[in-house]
View 1 (spheres, helix red, strand yellow):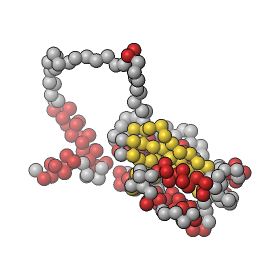
View 2 (tube, rainbow, N blue to C red):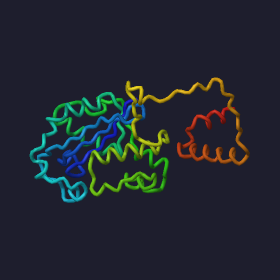
View 3 (cartoon, rainbow, N blue to C red):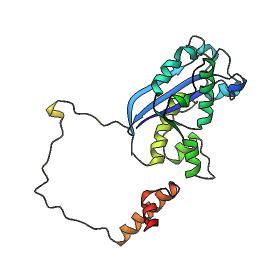
View 4 (cartoon, one colour):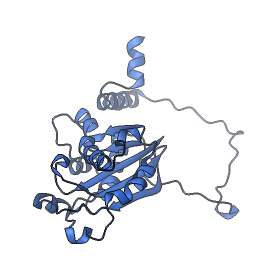
Length: 236
C-alpha cells in the first residue's frame, strides 16, 4: 500500500475568505516503510499571512515573494500523491485549502486524484477519548521526539505525523528503511542451516499467559474492539 503523509501551512484559517496555501510537505510510505521520497514546496500566496498564522509558522511574505505560485506546482503535487492514500491530521482543514487551490485552476478536487484519506485526528479521538489530541500532544503521549519543532513546518509535521501514525497503529518499532547488502559478498549476511537442530518448545507459564491476555485486551481496547481475535472469540 502506498501512503502519503501530508501537511500544509497557510496564510490563515479560511480559504473561503481568501486565505491561501504557503507550504506543502509530503512523506511517502510504501508497505509501512519509508521510501525516502518526499515533496516539499513553498508557495507564493500573493497575499500576506494573518498575524496569528505568522506566529505559528514564521514564514514571512518577503521569504515567499520569489517562490512559485500554486499554479506552477499543482501538477508536481498531483503527480506525487496520485493513487495514494493520504494520511492527514485534521484532514478537512488541509483538504479544504487544497481543493480551493485546485478549484482556482479549474482542476478536480483532491479526492479524485487519490485512493482515500485517513484522518489521524479522528483516529486519536477514538483511541484517546477526552484527551488532547493535537500533534504535539500525541508526540508527547507516544514518546515521539518533537524537540526540533519550535515553529510549525509542513515537512517536519508530516515527518512527525508518520512516526505518530506508526506508533498508533502498532505496526512497526521504527521508521528506518532496511539496509541492503548489495552484491558485495563481504557485506552479505552469513547463512546458518538450522534443519539439523531440534529446538525445545518452552510453553508460557500462568503468569506469562495472564500478561499476554492483558496486552491483547489493551490492543483490542485501543482499536475500538475491532481486533480479529476478539471477533473470532465472540462467534465461537
